[in-house]
Length: 103
Image 1 (tube, rainbow, N blue to C red):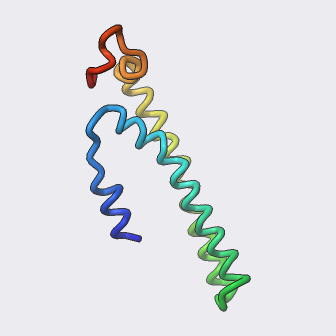
Image 2 (cartoon, rainbow, N blue to C red):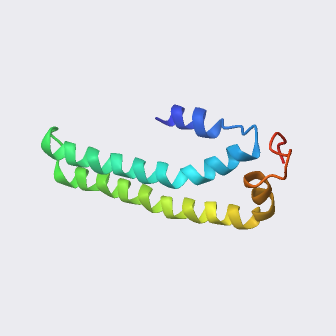
């Protein structure tokens, strides 16, 4: 998992301004989904695997902690939108003939 995260997130290299916007916009959902995966794994450990309750509870707590980071990611996205409002407005509402430019 660490290698996948390092390769796909750590190696991310945006080509356009829209790539940055898409990254920040999608990060909260990604983290919420990742947290849900840990919750689901904790449930499976209780019903399908011989994992003791204290361990399952800690796995569930990991899921909760990951989901909390989604709020920080949402704050980051909102800050990005606020700090780059003018640029994003031009990206989302280009002037006539400007849509092919990367502003």
